[in-house]
Amino acid sequence: MGNWNFDEIIERRGTYAEKYNFENRPDDTIPLWVADMDFRVCPSVTEALRNRAEHGIYGYSNPGKEYYDALLGWFSSRFGWQTEKDWVVNTPGVVYALNTAVRSLTQPQDAVMILTPVYRPFFNVVQNNGRTLVECPLVNQDGAYQIDFADFERKIIDNNVKMFILCSPHNPIGRVWQKEELEQIADICLRHNVLVVSDEIHADFVYPGYKHIPFASLSKEAEQHCIVCTAPSKTFNLAGLQCSNIFIPNAEIRDAFTGELSREGYHSPNVMGMLACQAAYAEGGPWLDDLIQYLSGNLEFVRSFLRENLPMVRLTEPQGTYLIWLDFRDLGLSADALEDLVSNKARLWLDDGLIFGKEGELFERVNIACPRSLLVEAFQRLKDAVDQLK
Image 1 (cartoon, rainbow, N blue to C red):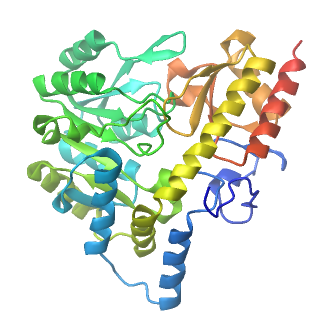
Image 2: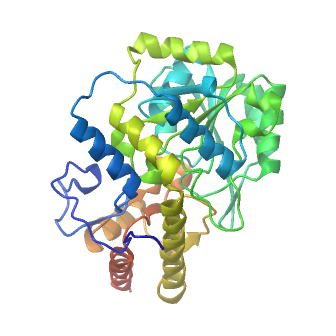
């Protein structure tokens, strides 16, 4: 590994960290909820920010050649996806971009479809913008989630769906969609003129044996009928710097999207976010590779601990992301009792599965991007709390 210590415990309380805002929780709560990491960023990012801070001027800024070289080079080298500078639109975040896409490319009351259970803001960006939400539940077969493509197409036809928001890799279940699955999505959506907006913010976290495929790389037809939302925020722990890169190959779609940005009054990215993004994509590869190795160790710890100590809590085997999806249904608890067990008895802050849709009842999402000692303590607390049920 390089000169970074993923085992280091870093105090984040008192730093305005949302993850550690314990207003209504005990001070010794272990927060494993919101998707940011408890690791220092790669050194190239810190150096870039320090250099700009010493420069001392933070005026309006826009990306230049070095930014695009780093950005496009990352997707070329990591995914074999050849992109173009003109496709890129900057936004403060992917959720911001999803809202912009819904407002600019659908009309009020138009139907927008999502696969559930899914990241909570997917529901909000549809309903808060006055569109009609169409849910297509994933099929859970003993912990293996699949798309029911007959149901997928039927819901598009029956509801006259105009837009499909894809989560790839899928949060919270950790699915990395295979090429054949993505091609089926593309074929159905093209056949019914459904625009695909693909949230690929977790693309860089894929475990051995799996491969992330950018939706726009499937075919020329798919490329011209989609928006691909990316950001360095999950990959390099930069969420607070507000910088995302939205790839829109189709000029007409891109013009509609940027027109809405203009109406919102957004026109220039955060200079620190832009510099952090550039430094991360230009020099952060070795750091990320070592991080994924460390996260694989965290995952193996959880896998072994559950098998040996909590066999009634089932891990949905993740193919990607640093978020794991745990099934507590075999404990026989109500939703309220499970929340009491997790929050009060174990003193853990997890994400209640219900926020990802009704299919998530009695599941919990756990963020494993933390020092292993913290994860060991968290799961020991969970075991102790479950043991008290007996």
